Length: 351
Image (cartoon, rainbow, N blue to C red):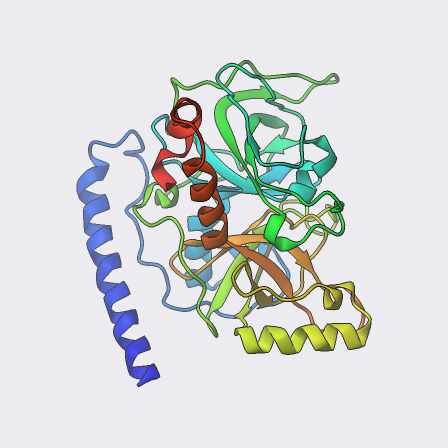
């Protein structure tokens, strides 16, 4: 019965993608991105590969993986010495609503440990330094172009949390990327207030960030594709790709025991099925904030932690987008109407 239901779901998903493909072809003639190729139907599954350079995948012979990587890779950029992932461009201004990890931002950089938002139309916390997304051309080399990055919302953070001990349930924040760009120079540069009159131009050849469904729920046993920017730039100068199996809650609980027995610090952090899921794969420092996607290119969550002890099971902890979305809705619904109006235009497509 389970296999039969999964088969039916897969058939429905295939039909949906065919319909979406037809819709994209119809709409492309009136799109600003009319030079984009026709959308593809993503593969129904993902083959397992180890840590791979983005350029090695793109220059390889696995066309399904190449196509899927091209759907998602433009959504993952750099933030400091780690990564960030553009969730959506469906807000009123067409800007990039992104997610990264609090420990990537540095939790001591927030004004408060209590949840807060920033009115970025009047308060300028934007940066250029260390903020990059892939070139709009799709080139794998980032070059020296920086893009404006504005923190928008962070949620409650425990008083005792540090950048290394913060739990997955709290290790995420939301920001905005606009279309301001500069060339990296000898001295720090700062953007103007968030630019709302020009939608973000990014490498998104199949408009993944504009689809009705930009995200989804992880399913046990399926393989996911993960993209991030390790600190090991010598071996991974243009980012890394890894694929791995999504573990069931039972498998994750078992892995926790195995990690504890191996002396890995991840074994000391209880598994929380409402917040996270495990992917059976190796992670590297700097991948935090990078995205985990399914075979349809839908965002499943962001990477926050990974095991790293010799002889310990290799797993990556991913905060579920469903948890992030739930916290966003809860935070937004508790705001006054006046405060809602200050951020609504930036998150309207995903609440």
